[in-house]
Image (cartoon, rainbow, N blue to C red; front, side, top):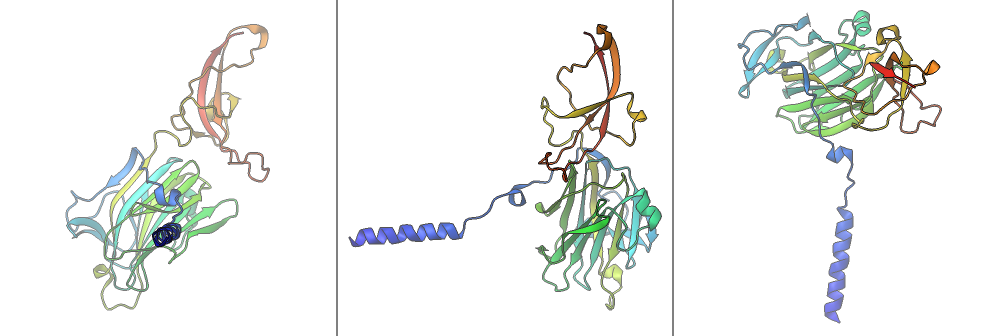
Length: 325
């Protein structure tokens, strides 16, 4: 009898312990960053001389140089609030990767901005915008952690949305951090050191045309900023050769517009859309003819029958077919 009681108590303890350690498993725990395969810009500074600057980056404010630290080379700001900008035509789906190291003294910050042409016209690299993406990687005000702060612009609401607030995610300080943004299918994901920390919808109000970084920190420290900076390295920006969520041979809704894509208002070229099925078009008069037009895949929300959620994104692709009755 005593043996059975002991066995039951052990079994109950095992069940209680198992329940206590049960974990939710979702994308936040399992999602992996997928880097774009079509490189638009890449710079690791390995071949850049110490003390030099990098061609193609406009200095909007302050100054920087290439410096060596932890056996690698970095963008090193020489003044607080140094701002650098690079023109780059972003595709609709893209990834952005970079590495940063944040000095402990006086809360070093590195800010990333992604701009439309109108953003730059309104204010050229303002301290907090305007831009479509506003990301801060910073040293905490207490020296025990680093943090990220992510905001994205919502064109429908005409305001910024805080996706990740300061302090909600904390990371081990005194080490380089791998930061990555993945934009695919109208969604933006933020990864820090391989862990996904944010997922949000993202549809900029116009094509992105530039990327910018601001090197900043708290003031009132006895060390000059060049000795306590935010460092930047390993920049890689790339597009994707195929869209996400559209498997080859699948059935997807399309609109067909007669004429070439350039005759249609504000259509963006679809990325390597695969069409492998026969299409039937109505033919007037029963005679064979060639039809030229533009196929437009319809981007539907998860529930296309909810009137307030229906959105259509036009992605034009020229298409030509010979048809007969």
